[in-house]
Length: 114
Image: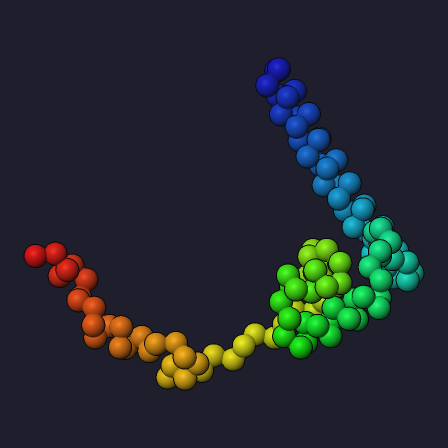
């Protein structure tokens, strides 16, 4: 009986946690729908953020932008859009060695030991 009581209490605790998460998610959705911002206030200066975006577009690294603007690295990643992925080209035209050349010089697997 004691084990059954413990299992039931754990079940009720799990259900209450699930309901709490659902109520919080609903409250956030209602606040967002009404135009209210959810969370703490934004402390990043919009002018500094625009300058950081310009620096990123001109090819500066995140470390350089952090030292120049004084904005924290995590804030930069949160507010700046991610860079588009660089296109991948076939045939090794990007300066990387071609994989077929590496295979020709390397011995087959299992044959490197005499």
